[in-house]
Length: 79
Image (tube, rainbow, N blue to C red; front, top):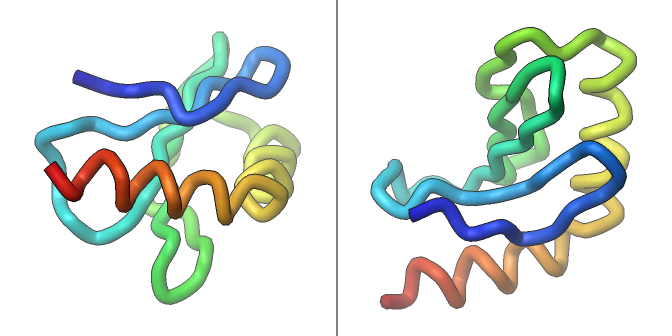
């Protein structure tokens, strides 16, 4: 299961249900995917094909939606 937290244009932000417990978010785009740690700071964990420009855009979107992502994380993983 990989619930979508939010979408922004061509970007989809989501979690994988059976992955590590350290808070993070995945993002997919038609040109690639990436994973970002949320703690202790927002940091790129892995990148599969996104350009530096797209990664910068993703970081801005994560920062703008950080509270929403964290609430969704706690709700999803409290199960």
